[in-house]
Each structure stands twice: as C-alpha cells, then as structure tokens.
Length: 291
Image 1: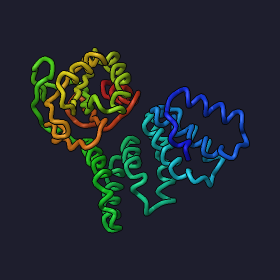
Image 2: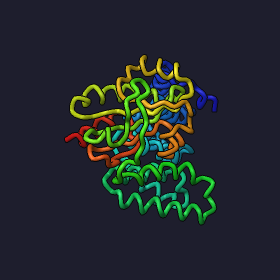
Image 3: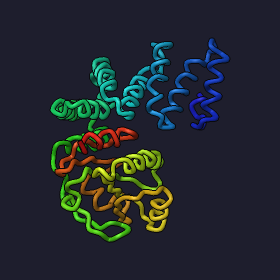
Image 4: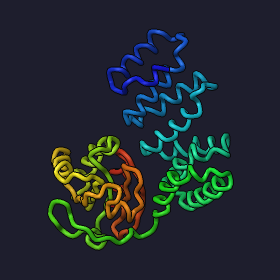
C-alpha cells in the first residue's frame, strides 16, 4: 500500500518502469502497473495514460483497480481531446454499473457533448439527476451538477457581463469581444492543474491570436501583487480580470464556477461552443471555430 504514496515525478516513474522490466513475475506487479498509470495521470500526461491503464486491465482483468482504471482510461482519452475513444468506454461502464452514475456521469456528459451529441448529453444529465435524487444520492449531486450546468450552456449566448482589464483598465464585455473566438479561462496562482495548462494556452494564443483568437483569464486570487507577478512570469499576454474576491469573484459567481481550471470557448457571435477544454484540445477547438 505504501506504493500508492510515492511522489509523482520522472525519477520515480523511471524506477517503476525499471521494476516492471526487471521483475515481470513479481507479486507486486498488479500494484506497480496501477502506480505507473496513476503517476502518469497525476503528471497530467493524458495522451500516455490510456495505454497504461489498458495494460493493467489486460493483464489483470479482475484487478481490484479495474473499475477506477476503466474510468481513468476513458477520462484520459477525454482530457487529451479524444472524446470519440472515451465515449464507448464510458457507455460500457454505464452498462456494467447502471446504479453508480456518480463514478462516470461527468465524463459521459462531456464525451457526448464533444462528440456532437448535445441533445443526448442533455437527456443523459436530466436522467442522472432524477435517478440520483430518487436513489437518495443527492448529496453527491452538487459537484456533478456544477459540470452539468456548464455543459448546458453550450449552444447558448454567453451571459452578459461588464468588467475591466486587470492591467489596462480597458472595458471587457461580450459586446467588446464579439467578432473574436474567445476562451474565458478561470484560474488561480494556487491551482496546480491551472498552471499545467499555461503552456497550452501560450501555444494557442501564439498561433491563433492573429487569426482572431483571444484569451480572457479570470483570476480567483486575493493577492494583487502575486497575481500580477504570475501573469508576467508565465507570459500570459492576454486579457485579465481580478477583483481579489476568490470564489466570490464577480464572474465566478455569474458563471457558477466552483472548481478550477474551468473555461468556456465562445464563437465569433458570442455563442458558447465548448466548456472545460484541456491541453492541445483548446487550440484544436479554437482553430475549428476560426474557420
């Protein structure tokens, strides 16, 4: 069990790989295969993680880790922009665990929506909310529903707002952003997964800004100086909003943001077209809307 508390870094990942190679019949092999996949997942290497979870399931089909491995395999496909691969795996989970929607409901709703099945996503979310309430699992619903609420925004005009840019004081609103493809990105200096996304944001902005792509970052920080330093250090050369209110941030409240990273991708007409994209998927989705 102590294996599960290993630090997630390249050095330890290399040790895990070396152990698997040197000891193919070791009694700990099942645990170590899981640890390799989980480490890769925890390092946000979502393109590599599905293969590693699949390797565990193939070698130990009745593993005590098989259920979580199947969920993470599907989620990693989803997070790496491969919703079409995630969807059948999630549908298989739904078939095997029809009364355990809390395990896979968020991922299923995102996968349906990103596969162009928005009507099916809405029907699925409505059904899950009813079934979980009837099963008295409503205490588990708020976190899931916060994701559902974002997915339900897709296809609708972005809510109206009027704020000022953190650095220039320039007015920012849906009207001022109209004509551009815009990613509204909620983040904070203390949010590790948010910081992991910065290189992907920089690439998308670098490659697409001249074509009409804009990033509007909303900080959920309290410290103005710390926020400004992070923006400068990370070369986040785009629009920013900061009001120092953390989770009570004006736009976080308006868009019901309860966890970060969170984002909305809006087309040139101000219609929400995708939510909570990650990694290279941001540039891919933005490029499609720019066309």
